[in-house]
Length: 197
Image (cartoon, helix red, strand yellow):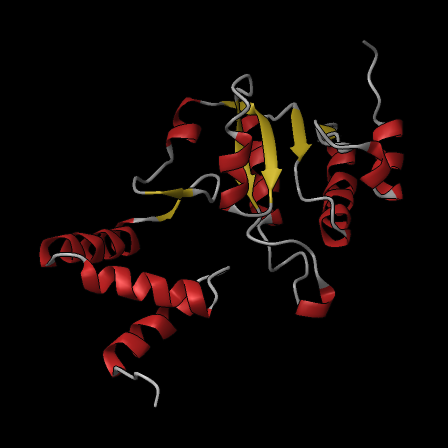
C-alpha cells in the first residue's frame, strides 16, 4: 500500500505546475516545506504573495518591475533599444556590462500556429517608442529559432523605412564547444558573422 497523504499530494501537484519541475523534484520540494518551521513557511508564502501583488510590467519597456518605470528605463540610453521576446531574456543580457541602452519586451514572438500575429505582441508599442525617443539603433535579440528569426526580420522590415539602424545579435559557436558537435546551421551562422581580430 502506498503512503498517500492528501495535503502532501496537493502540494506536490502544485509544484509540478512549475516549468522544469518533475514529479520527483516536486515531491522533494513538498517534503522540504513540511520540514521547515512555521516561520520559514510563512516567510516563503509571504514572498510569493508579495511578488504576485507588487510585480507588474514597466510602463515603457514591458519588463517586470515593482515601480511604475523599471530601473533600466530610468537610467538607460533611450536612443538604443534591444528587443527581446520575454522579460527573462533581459536577465541574461544584463550580464553584458557595456550595454547602456534600454530594452523592449515583445512578450512573445510571431507564431501563426499559436495564433500570435503582429497585433498579439508589443510591436505597436515599439514603433511608438522609436518615434517618441528618436531611436538611432534597434538591436534584435530574439532567440535564433524559426519564430525568433521571423519576428526579427518582420520588425527589421518595418523599421528600415524609418531610417533606424537595425542590427541582430551575433550567433554562432559557444565558447568551450568542440566544433565536431556543432550543427551545420550554427556553424554557417558563425562563419557568416565572423569578426576581424
